[in-house]
Image (cartoon, rainbow, N blue to C red; front, side, top):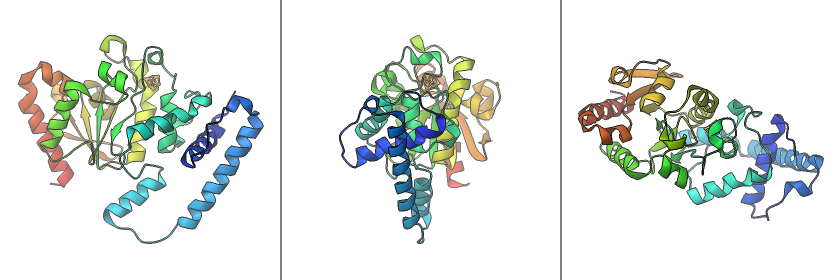
Length: 288
Ligand code: SF4
C-alpha cells in the first residue's frame, strides 16, 4: 500500500486508538486506501474534538511539565516496554517509509513507530531490534549515547549489559535513575555490524530521530556520552578529551559531555574525569 507522508500520522493514530480501545487487529491490505484514510480522518476529527474539550485549568511545577509534555504527545509515565513494543508493532501493517516522513512534525508515539520500521540507512539490514529509548520521556535529563551494541540489539533497549550497569551507577552517584529521572537514547537506533563506529552518512540519516526526540522530551539538561554523541551535539569534531569539562548548549539546552561507559570499562584511568563530569552535570541540573 502506498502511503503519502501527510496521511501517515492519521493512520498511525487510527491504529493506536484501536489498540487503546482493545479492538482486534486489522489488516490494512483487506481495505482500500480510501477506506483506511477515511477511518484515520474520522479518528483525527474525534481526537481533536476530545482535546479541545479538555483544555483549560491550572497547572504548576511537575504538573505543568507533565501537561506540556502531554501536549507534545509525550507519554505521561515511564513506558512499560511490553506496552511500548505492542504500540510499536501496530504500524507493521502499514508500509511506512521513514524516508518520506516529515520526522520533525511527528508526535512521540508516531516517532517511535516510524523509527521501528525505518529503512533510511544500511543498518536496517542487519538489526534485530530498533533501539529507540529507555527511561522517562518526561525526564529533566536526556542521556545520548552512540549506537546499540549486541545486547541492545537483542533486547531493544539502550545501555544494557556491563556498560549499562556502569551508567546506572554513575547516574545513581548524582541521585539520578533511568527509572524516573532520566531518558536514554542513542545517536543511531540500529546496531552497526560488529560494533564498528557509526559512519557519517548513517549519523546524518538517523539524526532527525534524535533531534525530534530531544525536542519532544524537552529536557532541561543533556548528557552526551562518547565521542560521536558529543561531536554531533556540540557541532565540532574535537576529541572527547578536549571537549569534556565544559558546558555547551544544544538548541539552547545546557549540554555536558563525558566518556562512554563502555570506554571506561576499557580505560579505568578515565574514571576520575568521568566522576568530575557527573559532578558538573549535577551542578548544571541544580542551577549552581
Ligand atoms: S540507524 Fe537510524 S536511519 Fe538507520 S535504519 Fe536505523 S533508525 Fe533508520
